[in-house]
Image (cartoon, rainbow, N blue to C red; front, side, top):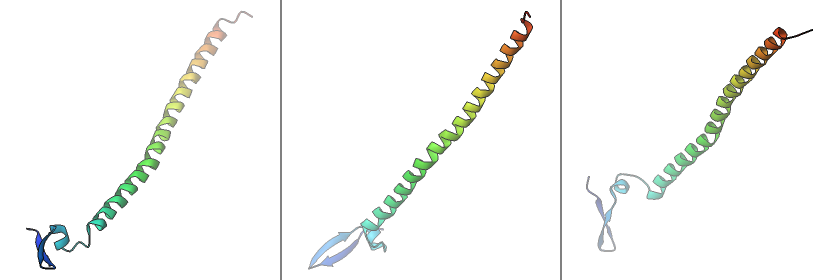
Length: 84
């Protein structure tokens, strides 16, 4: 669709197609995009750290189980080599 033309004080001006098609202003489009960007940034701000913390719980739990298994092996060896 070619840009519409408007007459302003005897001069013909080209009007962008998005304004001619019914959009109220370019600033309204920018406002919608800015709101979406802010919502995305806020979602990422809260979602990413919580995912990192949750995955860290699994790592710490696994490390605790490894240390516990190591302690059990040391205890078994100490029982085998007890001299009294």
